[in-house]
Image (cartoon, rainbow, N blue to C red; front, side, top):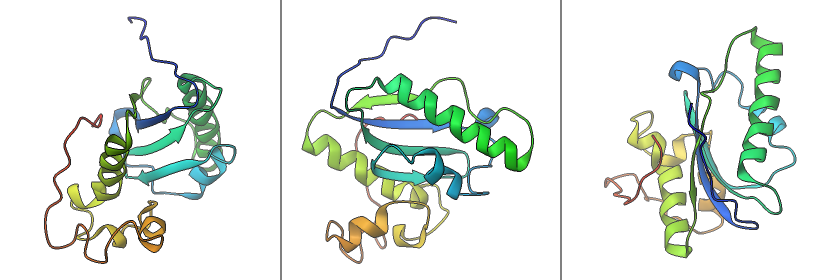
Length: 159
């Protein structure tokens, strides 16, 4: 396997996509495992889907690879302790350095619209496994955002 080189920019925001091994639909079995595995990191925006997750995180002084490695190890240990043995995650992950506020907004919108895009719900506020409700309560989204009209978001998001 080739060595993957990542940008290691301190104190930057990254958009991350992590996918389960063989795209198994296991992530909604217990969303509390995410909270426990992320206890030391503050996510700016996030969504948990059945077989993948997207989030935005500020890396601070750490490398994104170290943060994701720690998360995957912690989550996998918790998951296997509760549900039995087996591989949980694909080996790699998708990352994108957030470049500016427009890029940040596009990625936050993508995260929050993802359950609608995958047709799990017809409105982002019906998906309990995301940060959408918090953003809506804080005034970032209108009551009808993503409900009656398809949201088009430009960019690549690692799916």
